[in-house]
Image (tube, one colour):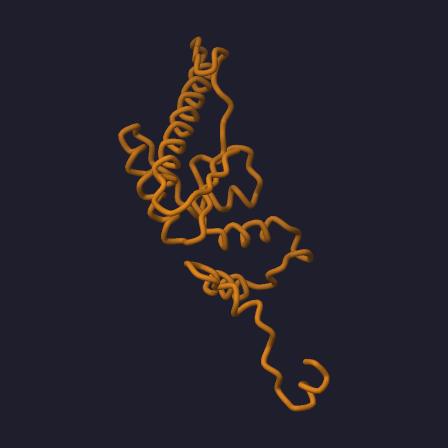
Length: 168
């Protein structure tokens, strides 16, 4: 796992793109080697000195949906010459929720989208968001920069003087 933290303008995005590309290339080499073995041909891949490297699922998380989209677009441009066509994001999200062991491509999410997907992994009676509307409200309120959680965490306005007296 990699957690990359740094100040603005320090090259985090460039480093992420390189790591994403290398991981994609390793996953692709592994997939081709497995396909050749399944077809009966001997396949030798020596990335780590012993056969194909293990498949690595990639989850790219950042605060804003805008940055996640930009990185996803840039990554697609980098891997296009390899002949790779990324699956639709909705398919990757379904695979994540279904806990599939190998995602077909990196999943690019805002931190808010990630929290919603984690919630969807829970049994229905344990979920935080009880409806699609609650998920949408959360995503709308938290996507982007700044402290957009403040409106969600602020106490509700008291509706009467009696509520004020009772601390509500």
